[in-house]
Length: 91
Image (cartoon, rainbow, N blue to C red):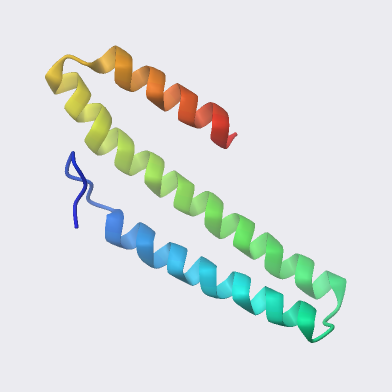
């Protein structure tokens, strides 16, 4: 299931997102059960951390595959601009 430029971390990223998805569902159930706000905030912080770590993996995979391919193909400037735009949206 590698991407266009030989992404090596796609499966790991998908697995992490599945765990995040499950964790978000658990937080929703906590709300429905009337759990305390501090308990919910702790869980939301865990999800935020997991999303940030997953984003780091996506970035690493992008640099290792897409940016590397762009350099090899002589399209570094376009790849760089796309990366900067994506980072601006994320942060």
